[in-house]
Amino acid sequence: MDPMRKILVPIHREGWRFIAIFAVVTLVLFQFSDFLGWVGVILTLWCVYFFRDPPRIVPTRPGLIVSPGDGVVQMIERAVPPPELEMGTDPRPRISIFLNVFNVHVNRVPADGKVVKAAYRPGKFFNAALDKASEMNERQSVRLALDDGREIAFVQIAGLVARRIVCDLVEGQRTRAGERFGLIRFGSRCDVYLDEGMAPLVAVGQSVLGGETVIADALSNEPPRQGEER
Image 1 (spheres, rainbow, N blue to C red):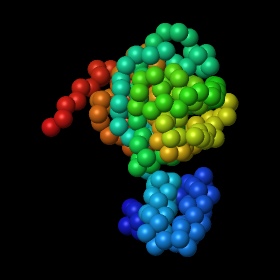
Image 2: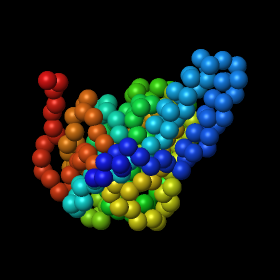
Image 3: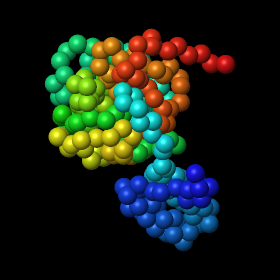
């Protein structure tokens, strides 16, 4: 990769308005105090960093399910998909990924397929690290039919300070694994509901990269992985 691409990382289009606001506020703060002005500079630089949109190398073999976002695998458990997706009431394997305010927040599609249903549901703004966030918080849910007929779901969940979920997917749209589809502003969580028989290939506490880290393999019979800190 060109070294300059690591330094001059693209900015997501949703970020430019906020960067401009931070920059204007910083200029105003300098009129009152150099100290406040430099605080504004730091916050403006953080805003630029938050909305970065780096390129990713996406594994392209059929059957691979990649992480929809950067962060840490917080929970792996069985859970019922959001009711608005109409995927039934049977629990499925669910991988929950927590994104803090320093992670890349551009979200990526986990797999090749077709969007069957996309549904937004308003809700609360609990800490996204809490288990109840999956059920109670504001969310955007997507039901995706894979090319082999099986289905998965992925959910963008707002967090304690997140106040906007952006999702560009529409029902009937074809998707490719790793392509960008939206973001969540200022702290959030992504849940992925696998089809029955798909084992998670990540462990709780593991760091993942959106579009790059393989979190499951629809064509593998490998048992769920375990992990330990070393």
